[in-house]
Image 1 (cartoon, helix red, strand yellow):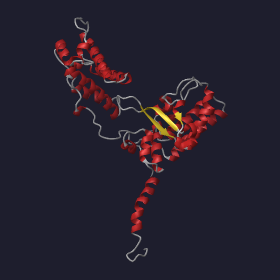
Image 2: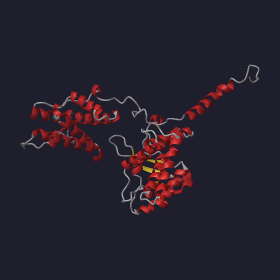
Image 3: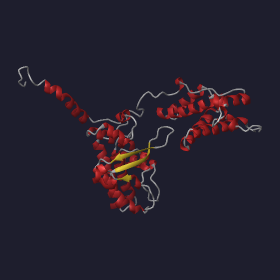
Image 4: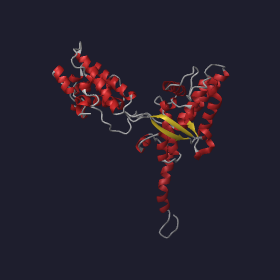
Length: 373
């Protein structure tokens, strides 16, 4: 394939000899088709390409200009609207800017011929629009709100106890929803007990549980295979195996699978968490139930299901579990990612401080003549 025959090249997407009723719109559609072809040739999947295309179309609508008329000022205005009007997080805006930069770089890459095609058709051409001075730099490891924190052990116990109480209340009142309440109580225990994200949890199947020879006492629940871990941008979901470490959580999921889930009447459904209508529980439903329990208990409003994952990392750290093991358990590529999840308690810090000071204090207890002071 020659330089001019690269996937996504302008001459491969533009139909020669055909007069378009709306040549500008036809050019935009050809550009987007070409960009999709260029990404597909690099092995990217549709679930990566489709959101990128939607983002570019939203930017087109915002600017009300064609790509060959875009300039850096359009990105400035767009970013201000995302920040001031939609109040999006810096990490989200930076992701949008990255997608837009990729499209802009594709259009201005001379190998694909779009600049030449635009010059011939409209007398102008696309220019780079995303630069250091109008895009958000990744300056911090963690960009979440400062208020976000893990639950304390006391808060966690209150949450899990309250979830269990909702099951008992539904049973006593003979109301519908007892099965769903039991499912959700178990689900929160699994999120915490294996340090999971909300989406990872919703996509678990029964078949994702397996034995761990190193923890035979847990039987078929010794290892959890997470198939939909958080992906690196543009890459498929990352898989990982999470070893079971909390016996009480194993007992909770075993009881749910063996005694509660069959009552939903979904024996042929692969999902671990099923609804009373025979579907799979969605991430938004997990969030809604958590928020309802959180608000009923008066827990911090910044707490989310992800706080349970934070708590898992923090509590294992307080219990002296090796940091590398925790990193593998939660699927962090870098140790710094695990570190920002760790908000150890004051009691833990005091204990650690005493351990750190112990050698120095011991050395200072003896006098020059060998007697203790």
